[in-house]
Structure formats: C-alpha cells, structure tokens
View 1 (cartoon, helix red, strand yellow):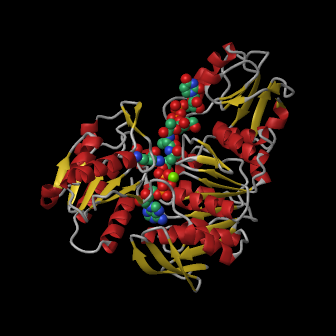
View 2 (spheres, helix red, strand yellow; view 1 turned 180 degrees about the horizontal axis):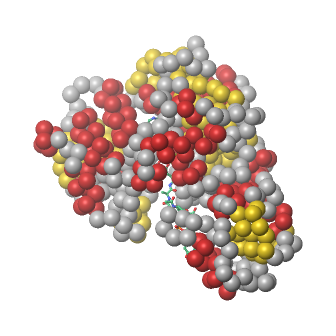
View 3 (tube, rainbow, N blue to C red; view 1 turned 180 degrees about the vertical axis):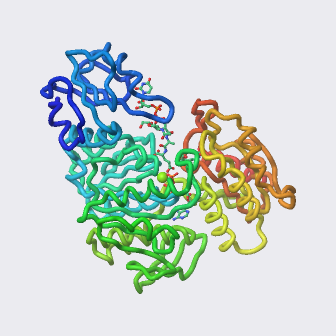
Length: 490
Ligand SMILES: CC(=O)N[C@H]1[C@@H](OP(=O)(O)OP(=O)(O)OC[C@H]2O[C@@H](n3ccc(=O)[nH]c3=O)[C@H](O)[C@@H]2O)O[C@H](CO)[C@@H](O)[C@@H]1O[C@H](C)C(=O)N[C@@H](C)C(=O)N[C@H](CCC(=O)O)C(=O)O
Ligand SMILES: Nc1ncnc2c1ncn2[C@@H]1O[C@H](COP(=O)(O)OP(=O)(O)OP(=O)(O)O)[C@@H](O)[C@H]1O
Ligand SMILES: N[C@H](CCC[C@H](N)C(=O)O)C(=O)O
Ligand SMILES: [Mg+2]
C-alpha cells in the first residue's frame, strides 16, 4: 500500500480532482487487470487508447485514475490526476511505488540496433565473476544473481521493469545491466530511472514500421543519452556514423571506444578465426572466445564500461577472455557429419551482412555456405528485400523460409523478400515456407566441411504463426537433422 501523494512525487501534474490521501494497492495500465483499490493509468498506444477503458475500470472499483483528459462524468469517490503525458507519468510513478530501486544500484543501459543483448549479457557474466551480485534485463532472459526470470520484451514496461529492479535490490544486487530498446525510449518505459551509465553499440536499419523514419529512430536512441545525469557516463562507438550524435546533448561524462578512429578505449583486431579472435586492447593482446569483428566492438564496449565502473583491468580481461556470448548468437551446432551449423539472431540487414562477412572471412577454402533466412511478420517490411539480397550476395545457396509470421501471411512475407533477389541470384535461391523443412533440406544439400547459417531466431524457443506460439528451437532442430545425417552415413 502507498499513498497516492507519495506515488505522484516528481510527476508533472496538471490538475487533481479528488483526495490525494487515497491508499493505492497497485498501479496498472491495462484495464483487464483492474481490481478494487488500484490506480489505473490511461496510456495512448499504437493499437488503442487506454482512456477508452476508464468507465470499465471504475466498475471494477479502482481508487484513482491518471489520464491526459478527464472523462465527462466525474465520479466523486475516485481521484482523477491529469497529466500531459501518461506514459512518462507511469515511469515516475512506478519508480516511486517500488521506492526508486534504480537509485539503489548501479544501473547501466545498453542501446543500439545490434549487439545490446551480447554487451549486456557479457557485462552481467563479467560482474558476477568479479564477485558482485548482479542483475540482467535482456531479450533472451532476465536474471537476478543467477535466478532466471523469463523475459517478454527486450525492455520491460514501466511497472514490470521497476518491480524487477526492486527484486534485484532486495536480493542485494550492486549492479544491473539492461538493454534499452528504441521502443522503450519512445514509449517512456525508462522514464524516472537513474542510470549510472549508458552504452551505444551502433545504428542501422530496423523498426521503421514503428519509428517511420531513420531520423526518428535515431532521435529515440539519442533521447536516452539526452536524459542522462551529469554523474553518469556515456560510452559510444567512435567508428559508428551516429556514435558522436548520441553524445551531442548529453550532460554525462563522454567516452568512446573503437577499432578504427581515435577513441578512449582502443582496440585492434589481430586475428579472426572460427574458434575466437585475438584483440589488442589498449596495448595488450588477448584471446576471446567470441567470433567476428562485430564482436570485437561488443567486447570493447564491455571493456570500456567496466573500466568506467572502476574495475581492475587485468581481472576484467582475464575473465572476459573466458566468457562465451549470449545464447543463439553465432552459436555452433556440432555433429559428427563434418557440416558446420551456425545459429544466429541476425534479423536486420546489417547483422546479416556482418555475420555472413565474418563467415566468409574465416572459412578455409571452397566450402559451400548455405543460408536459411526469413523475416518477421508485423515488423518493418522494408528490411525484407534487403535481407534477402544480402543473404544471396554472400552465400552459395539461400533457402528463404518463415521466421515468425505473427499475424501476416507467410507467403506474402516471402514474396517481399523475393523482391530483393536479383536475376543473377535467382539460381541459388530455394523457397521453402516450412522452417523445419527448410532446415532439413539445407542439411541434405550440405557436404562435409560446408557451413549452414540458420539466421533470425537465435535463442527463441517458439515460432509465432497466426498469433499462436508453437514450440520451435532452431538449435535443437538443426542439431537433430545433422545427427540424423551422421547416423545415416555411419
Ligand atoms: C508496438 C509496441 O511496442 N507495443 C507495445 C505497447 O503496446 P501498444 O502501444 O500497442 O498498446 P495498445 O494495445 O495500443 O494499448 C494502449 C493502452 O491501452 C491499454 N488497454 C488495451 C486494451 C484493453 O482492453 N485495455 C487496456 O487498458 C493497454 O494496456 C495500453 O496501456 O505497449 C505494451 C505495454 O508496454 C507492450 O506490451 C507492447 O509491446 C508489443 C507486445 C510488442 O510486440 N512490442 C515489440 C515491438 C517491442 O516492444 N520490441 C522491443 C524490442 C525491439 C528491438 O529489437 O529493439 C522491446 O523492447 O521488446
Ligand atoms: N556489434 C554488432 N554490430 C553488428 N551486428 C551485431 C553486433 N553484435 C551482434 N550483431 C549481430 O546482431 C545479432 C543480434 O545481436 P544481439 O542479440 O546482441 O543484438 P540486440 O541489439 O540485442 O538485438 P535485439 O534488438 O533484437 O534484442 C547477432 O546475432 C549478430 O548477428
Ligand atoms: N526484437 C525484435 C526481434 C526480432 C526477431 C525475429 N525473429 C522476428 O521475429 O522478427 C523484434 O521484436 O522486432
Ligand atoms: Mg536484444
């Protein structure tokens, strides 16, 4: 229980109709969760408007309503709080409700198109090994010092986020590393949080369905840095075209990392193999288990952040060199067949290009590279032809298949992808809608030594078709198919 006036601390309130002394049992923003004594926040969304449900939640006995416009019929037993932006107010209120957990630990946010999960997960694993109680909020999973809590979003909503941070504080965590998606910034999911630091990975094509233009997408990422406190650090990628833009208006302490340009944390890629990479970091050569030059950037970001968090350099490099990355990111699938399987979460044009160019650079000779790839439904359609074209340009054979069609027709998604297949690439492309069948075909086409890249779904354990999530695990299925081949050959 909390008093409404305490929950409203720091909220930009325009007007209050009714008593501020109301006792609130819980904050909600979904009318379907309304019960007696709760505070309902009416948020305008992408599909509907929470204000439409005010009448409904009153019937369920809510105590107070936070909204941007008051309904015509005011009920005397309810307190109405008028604000200019409900989503922002929700962030501040959720933080107050959970006693400002983000201020009680060192919270570091990671943003960018690709690499967030990898950087946040490496930081989490590193700080656990350094001996700190640590939390993680990520696409793959959330963790509180070793306890896994399944994640629903890359960045949870205001309430779930503060509840998780509160649980981390209760568990005695010193640090939390979290991914900050552009949706989260635009929807004020991080409003009211105190960040000790922010890390930027890169900005390339994604989510234009939601942000509409690249410049709006950039603005969402930048807004995270603009909101940082003077005491925080802002660590950016000096080699990314938009790296410097992130720091333009921030009050935070500005730092950079990079492989090419002048940077505070400087790295040089010495060797790049399927077994890992040799990096020179600030003058010291270290082996890492992660593969590909894009991971050299992720490692540098982790190194830079841990230095800014005042950790011991030698300990950091020693532990980092032992760590593996996040599940489903350049993940090997081994079998006795001699075929190399790689499961990777590449679902943007840049990620597809990076992962394929990495394979291209480090493969030994004339092995075939077979890529299985799809694109998600109800997501940025303009990515589709570009991802297909990139896959074709870098592979010997491409099987276009379904990713998560969600509510879209899988064939329509594949047709969008095929727009990107140029006439000279047509001969290398197969179209197999059923993802399992596509995997099976790739395995049959491959010879020992060949490489199969299974892109797009990484760690995901489901395939969402027509709104239903069916169990589906890329790594498990690819492994089963490769083992079947092995047994047939033996
Ligand atoms: C497009 C998008 O981001 N949608 C998110 C958004 O929902 P929305 O704006 O569409 O909400 P809405 O359905 O229009 O409803 C508006 C309001 O009315 C309320 N409502 C609605 C219906 C009802 O009966 N009663 C009611 O009160 C809703 O609770 C909401 O407050 O706010 C919801 C609550 O926080 C999120 O769950 C939802 O995530 C959807 C499920 C989603 O798929 N989001 C993805 C795109 C996403 O956020 N991805 C990023 C990662 C992207 C990356 O790779 O970088 C993430 O952080 O996970
Ligand atoms: N620094 C990087 N630069 C470019 N591509 C990368 C980088 N790091 C990872 N990738 C590619 O992007 C994919 C996704 O990586 P990761 O999950 O770390 O990113 P993310 O930003 O968390 O993605 P999401 O927004 O979907 O959660 C990887 O599987 C890999 O193909
Ligand atoms: N966070 C990303 C994940 C995409 C993963 C891919 N498998 C897809 O379904 O498009 C999104 O929600 O857009
Ligand atoms: Mg992620």
